[in-house]
Image (cartoon, rainbow, N blue to C red):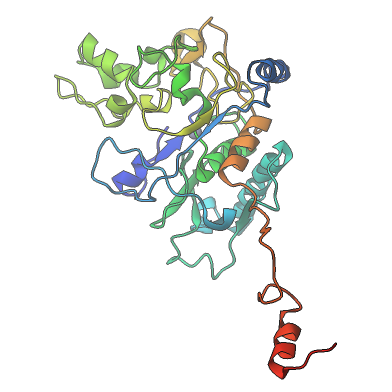
Length: 364
Ligand SMILES: [Zn+2]
């Protein structure tokens, strides 16, 4: 799951990740129905997504409860750079990764992101200078990304595995690219979890969370009391801060915070009381992060399901709502409709007007 890198601890805290899971298939059908329902309820086109509320772009606050969100990428432009091509095994292998990053972004465009308004491109050598901390550094590792733009460095860690996480390398890249822009996990929206979970704001749980099936659960909860385990299995904050139980055992390697409802304020739009985007590439499938089960041919255990027990399958491309969420964060600049008077520099006739004024001439 989470990689060990030379990133500072607070930077690690700023990241979010995918884990490993089995093959995926794409859900279809429900979206149109739900959209229609919401039109009736709200008399408006519905959207479902969650993305960050832009933060101050600082990773180091010293507050263990702090959840760092970056700022918006300036100019609606995200420039990415290979930190070190050699870590991929050379230029040829790096080129394959480069192609898949481009392909992953094309999936966002295909879902509806306007590529003229929102720019995602590789930097040129000058932009990719090691001293430039305003770009997104591509490194090799497990899957995670900083969320939003930080002025003191940004990183997206990608795995070259073709089968990990969503079961599709380009889909994994698309998920992490979503985080890099500021998108959050669909399943962590707090209105999809009941009050039984810290920060939950829903009336009922949309999910059944099988905390004990998360990879590493037995090892990292060994010696904890039932109450302590209950705490880390229901609270994002307790899970994230590296809760240490009465035994002195820290649970912070479990990364349960990747599933639990986000306590921080963030922007979200929900089409109604019941719905989330089943097609979102920002949604974890049921077995992601599950422990390999020796009693079931080493298949990954089911970490969470829909409340009725239905499995959640992996999506391999951003959905229409994902694209709407990203576009909501980075809207097209409003056209400037301020009148351009003859005395304004914006007016192409301004120079001639000034000249005429200066000459004192006027025609009758
Ligand atoms: Zn993620």
